[in-house]
Length: 201
Image: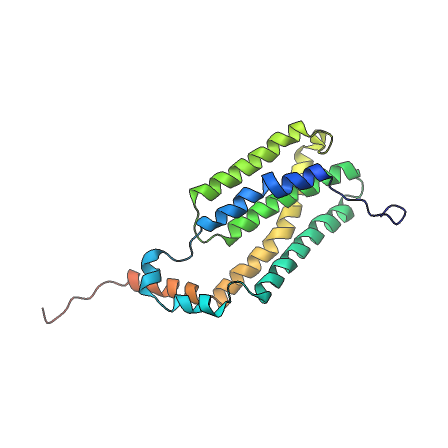
């Protein structure tokens, strides 16, 4: 706030790049992700019951996404302003925007069930595009502030904003797995069991 007038932290160019270049392709590549292969989908019909119940995309799922976004945005912005008060606002913009992009890439990899080469390529190209635009958009991104201390601050903010959510998801998968995760674990156990010979043969 400046004289009770809201001033955006990121200008229009950075917001446009975040929505179109840096994060759009990895998000769209999530369509290549598969939680169950075709063989097991045909072998275990109960998997279709969860889709019919509409639990994959409901109000609860939407509110969880909103809470994650609010948590990560608040952690990245408020923690950076609190810890890096000595830095100029110009440097904080570069630190928080870089941490925001890396956190989004980590969020995408967290949601993956299988690694697809298209997703890996899109994430690599998005990060490369951001690194390339740092040299071009010198008025929006302070490239001169990028050093070891800058990398330390980015890694710290990214870790605090992403790892707790990832840890909660791992705990939920361990103690409260979904139906398809239970079936996948059960099918792996039965596949690992040795086949018994028929004594009547």
